[in-house]
Length: 179
Image 1 (tube, one colour):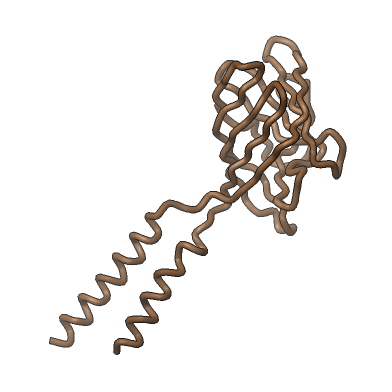
Image 2 (cartoon, helix red, strand yellow):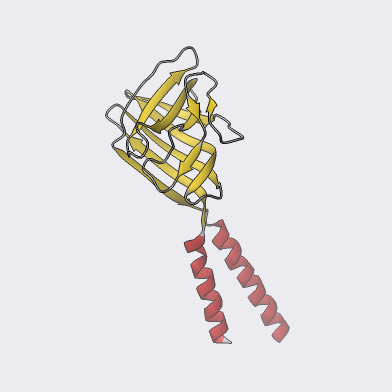
């Protein structure tokens, strides 16, 4: 009986190790800009490749910070022209990078009304160019990122709470049945 309880306890303890959603934290820093974003993505079926479905965070350019207000939608995840006409994008993420985006990059909106596109300067090279396009015309702002990071974001601890609650309920029912 006690061995079985130890096995249950070990199983519950291992839940956080597997508690990662397809959510990634991306950060990039350049001499005049930086970006910090939480990216939600779904697997494409190809190894280390994800379709980006949502983004949040902020971008700083020349000391001015702007909140990311949302992803430019791309339902097909094939190269498309951005709404401003300044960029080609497909919103695909690679976890095997850098670079973490293909040559078409990711396109998203800023709360200030701008449009941002990240894409590699050269395919296969770990430096990203940072372009900033305004809704009223295309103002290119280029910066080379020398430091990029991509990491998984663990799911909330609610999974652990639910699992331990279920374990406690089952234990209580078993104890009542034994009486």
